[in-house]
Image (tube, rainbow, N blue to C red; front, side):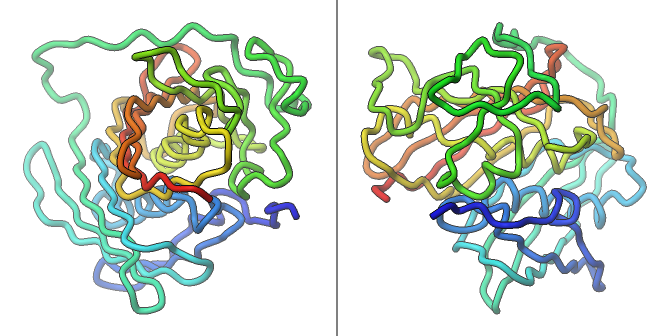
Length: 294
């Protein structure tokens, strides 16, 4: 049976209703679910919206660091977030977030915001990977057995049984291969996954959308396996490296490159890099996940 379910748009599904004293109400939509519960990147996007609404309502600072610990799965329905401004300095603000569902805490987060244009002692940046460009948003989708990694005229038609969130975005793979294909990486090389990501409708590349992209792709650790598994996230850290204004950067595809170098004792890590098409580094991400048979 397909896991595809009707879902609200990204903005509607991450919308907040202000309560009082730094508290916000959200409505978790499992149309944005991973296999076991609400997707971690989707929940991170909700957290980002709460942080910016409470700690930076005038858009004077930029979200630079976010670490979320996922304490238990979040299901469909009401979610209450409490945002506490821990400290505000001349350059950096520190924020704490807690989210409660059905009387239980489902996630805890710490974040840091910085003023734009901090004085820089030095600058160096990674080179973006050389890949085929993103397809046009209106390009058709083709099934996985027809897919080629240099295809810039189509998006991937994900399998009907793929997690619901996979049906909410358009994906054009550029790294790695199919999940659960049993193809092992070369000795000493990380497992890889990723490619171009966009929403079906135009959307600015704002901080909430970047948070979604940090955890929207299937884990790179799935490709070396020959049978299904799940990888619920324990913790996710996102470092926002580009200067992303409150209104976001212009609508465009995002390139996600995700790698995993170690799976051991039922745990797997994943490192991500997010780029724009012009080579702009948007974010680094790192997460640790439970790695267990489905």
